Length: 225
Ligand code: DC
Image (tube, rainbow, N blue to C red; front, side, top):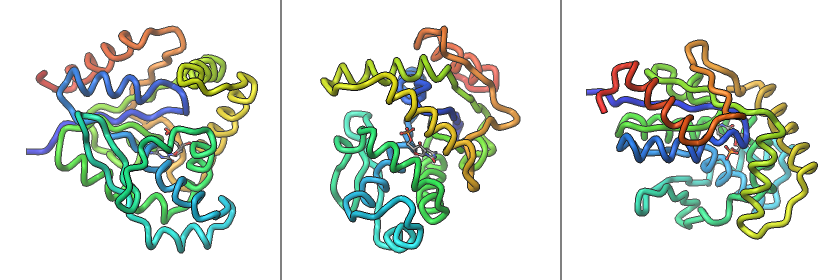
């Protein structure tokens, strides 16, 4: 029996991970955060002092890197060459590097393989940029979750402040707009809505409303849960 998979794509800060996590726990699905995998690769390149523009060096470094995931109390942990780096990947620096190096095919190939394997092994809710279009093109439920740049920047700022990290709203807005542009205009697997995706603009919705909507869509498409 195949597994029931839910693909969620959308730009940075749209609330994908918060919402996917909640929906996964309601449905008893495994949550797969693919952004964390790109961030892990990015951390590896940063540690090696590789510049994002240096495609050759990125490609060469891809040969020796091992990225895997495991779950601890239901939470996804990312493992870089045997080291759990989950606590080190949530910075703006790593996020921007992830966006910059995710344009390279060797980076994507490695991670897409891992993602597809996970979706074969369990019912997953997977979020990212190319899940509905490339990673799980046959997923019965595809969601494109978005929100205005202003709302997304506000949310990200609040998140950082809650962690005690100072932030400037204007800088975050610029970062998000740059990241959107890069993610949407790259050559390989750009961020775009799958033709059969349901578009949800969460700018004026609560987290709970979005979760309910996704569960509704899944049931409409045959999920018995
Ligand atoms: O979702 P996030 O902000 O953690 O993702 C970081 C970057 O990784 C994002 O800007 C682009 C890249 N990414 C990608 O190219 N494909 C994915 N499926 C997930 C993330």
